[in-house]
Length: 92
Image (cartoon, rainbow, N blue to C red; front, side):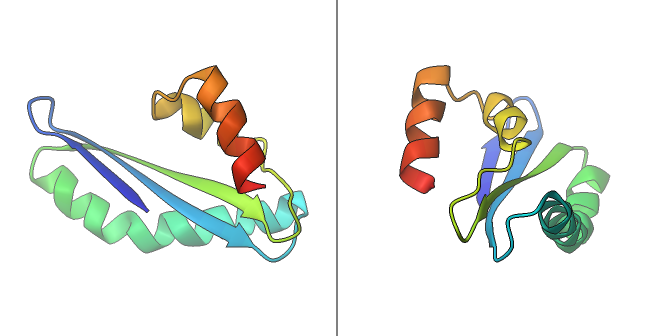
């Protein structure tokens, strides 16, 4: 999990990295829903304190599958295309 705090903007991006045992799309969506539910209470607490909170999940299949939704997560984090390509290779 990565907590990125930009105090002057009062914006927090929470990214949980998870490995899903199954590599089907349904398994990825279920893993994503569990992680977003898990971090909802702390995110609500931060929102109540005036922070803008964005939560994302980076999912890799245990057998080497890459969730296509990860591309948007990497863009949100400001990771360049070149480095994102390297991350995919190293993580999978």
